[in-house]
Image (cartoon, rainbow, N blue to C red):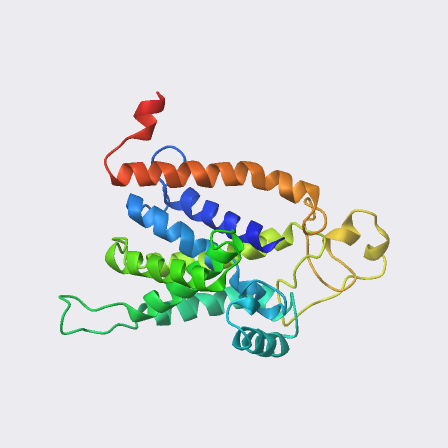
Length: 262
């Protein structure tokens, strides 16, 4: 799945899980401000798994340093769609997010501790999302400015749920894997254990695409990454995100969009 599409599905997942106004499941309800900031953060988190890709959005995040970091990650994880694209990686991201969530600093000018771990991670993730979604118009300085503004907003309007950051990052990362699972490339879900199918399996027309000869698992309903089907899926997803963000923005200022539409 393409980078911008990963980001958009990440935002959609956060809205679907948190929104309670009829357009979401309300499984993890947050305030309207939490919906907006969380959607941006979840969009960025949905790009993190491609830190193992030399030409992905994250690798271009900072001149020279971005490629050096992602190159190191790629070598350590075995390359693109290897270690960072398995269930073990989701667990590691959850643990990392938990650790970042506990990093705080008590400023002498603030009444409560500042969540520096959340702020730093949010700035980076939102910058990634802003660049991938075209909000920065192809400029990384603008993307990082968006990230810093978003992180400041998160610091001020932190959702009431104390574990929201952990859920947001882990959800976004998991949505990335789900998107790639729907393409023909598939995923090594149980990495570093990547069992290969028996030869008889590889001869069955449909099943050989579900469990590939390389040991990857897939439900390739979208075809190849960037296919027409993938783009078609993103049309309703984008409309859903747009509606959810608009609804949350209006709700934050006291306007009930549902009541207006009815």
